[in-house]
Length: 281
Image (cartoon, rainbow, N blue to C red):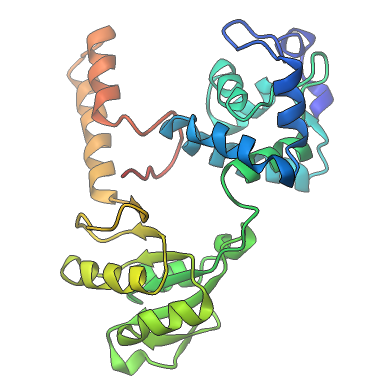
């Protein structure tokens, strides 16, 4: 697929689709360039982006990166929306939050749009990841090649089992959980992933916070207590399965109409039209 393959009618929607905010020159130029001197502008925009739109921006970035790897230079909203699994109007609205409106008759410049989304998501910063709990899930996360490929290299591993100390997983040696604070400080870990049982998760979280970690991805089935300056994202696969079960049961029961749709949306407000596993606070 190439950016030139989109229909002319779709191109006409770029930069002026019905329902989109008008592409003012200031917004267009700020979104297209956004040099380091304009970090404050980028951050101001980021604070105004709805949570569901942030999740979709991450999906757009993954899709755009794949297009870029394939040599695609420009892309229409229709092409990008189909690849990301959202409707084109929602996509244009999401991109308007970061000041990107595309060019009428051309579409979006892939490399420019990748840069805009990366700045908005804070991906221009250097990150290092620590995984705590090297069971089946932790083992899989430590070996997952998608982390380093997207700027999140796994730099430290921890487990409570002393027999695992020093054993490399994915090329990274395992430390005992007693070393979380020291190792996280020394390696300047920015993101902690908790893949432990529920009973040990809070203590692990406390250690990560003491070690300077301000972003935590929690797979443990427990609500963590953290300071206000620490961001926690919870991945609960059981909850996602329950939500899927609800949608299937609703279809089987023959429910339909606006009221049924409203209940389904309320059941998972953070889904935001993004396919795959959904993370929520």
